[in-house]
Length: 181
Image 1 (cartoon, rainbow, N blue to C red):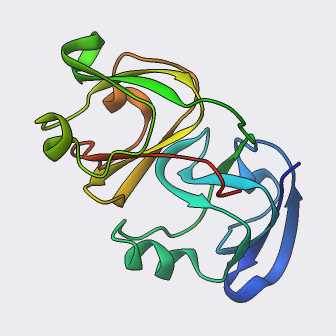
Image 2 (image 1 turned 180 degrees about the vertical axis):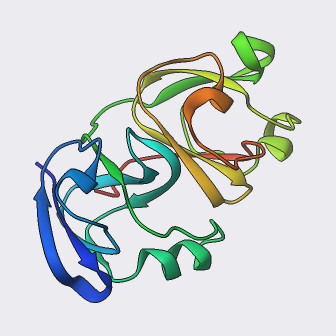
């Protein structure tokens, strides 16, 4: 089971909130959230309530300053964390279908492993919809798993643009969440 502790201030200072599941609005427990410790498991943190906005993948470790971390990762400023989702441990096969256009249009390719560059591997300039059959995945706007990211779990995603991941201009690389948690 996962466990994450959020702190109001940077460097694990101020009031704290201990969490071991999804939380749609951390501000119900804290005035703000600027640092955290992941004790067990993996989480995706969002800068807006209800699992919306910019996202950061958090595995076991200490994160002393979200604002600094977000700018170092090329994700822009993250003033605070507003919601988080626990990533369940997945054992077994990973499989997803990616589509060039919304509503499963255009080119379709099936992935069972990481893809550092959709352009290089499939001559596909973007991924605008997908169907995740097995596993949990991170989709990145830049090749080699860089830039802003979006978390997808099993399900159908007719439009990745409508998922609340703001400021992602395109999906350029995709990585499985395995052996990270």
